[in-house]
Length: 103
Image 1 (cartoon, one colour):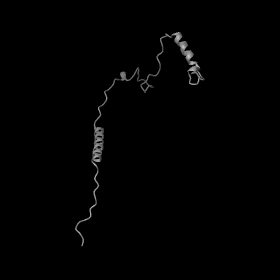
Image 2: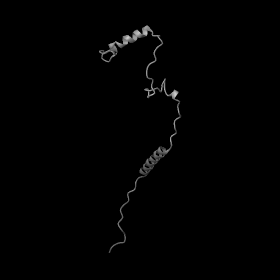
Image 3: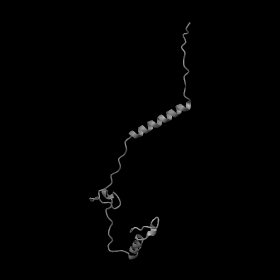
Image 4: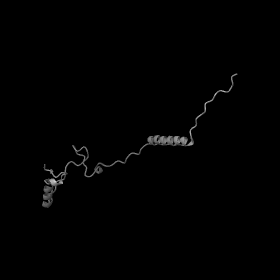
């Protein structure tokens, strides 16, 4: 005769630490989604005069950077100019002592 009991498979259960890990990962994912959906505050407006160090907004300087150096008012120190000249032609400053800036 046939028995009324149906054969059942043994159910596999996850250990408690696996459930804790799943819950922790789900909370992390949920928090990232919530933080991604929150609005971001707009930055404060800055006046054009404060856009950078001596920046100007004159064409073709559309980057906002200074276009050229300020010319000195005829006050050039001859010792500093001589030092700049010597450094410009000095090959010792290169990595292999072969090339100067003048090359």
